[in-house]
Structures are given as structure tokens and as C-alpha cells.
Picture (cartoon, rainbow, N blue to C red):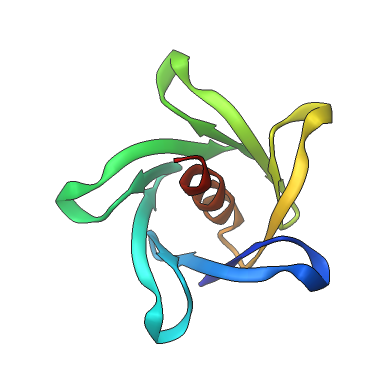
Length: 112
């Protein structure tokens, strides 16, 4: 599982995790599934009621699909950034192997 934090350094707060294609809000026994991901695509919801909300690829997180998709953030070395280019700001961190999914989960679900 990859842990997802909002904030950075000492002031960060664990808000969820992701692993095996599932995105969870909360921690421990009280965590609940809020989304899924597969092959870079991220969905809100679970099972038959899931809705496509965006994707992650090559260090970027996008909302929308096809030609109309918009870059809303980036991830690099475990840091999650809102925005892109010079105007981006670090809003969180992730610790684990699936940092692309974790970044996408945080940015896309916050953006909803």
C-alpha cells in the first residue's frame, strides 16, 4: 500500500492510501474505498457505479479525457504538486511504490 499525505514535512496528515487498484480514504479499520485506478486511469466510486475522473502519465495528473484533458498537477520523487510549471505548489506527499496513482488520487478527488 502507498500512503497518501496532505501537507509536507512535520505538518503532513495521512489522509488515505492506495494499492492493488483501489483508493481508500481514511486509515486503519475506518478506511473506506472511494475510487479505483487501472492502467493510468482513475475512477471515482467502485464496481459498476464507478465514474472516470482523470488519469496519470509521465509525472503528470490530468482531469478529463482525450483532447479535452487538462493537466491539474504533477508528481515527482514522492511529492505531489497542484498546478504545473512555475506556478505549481507542493500540497502533499506519498510513500510507497504507486506514487503516480497516489498523486492522481489526491489531486483528482480534491478537484471533484
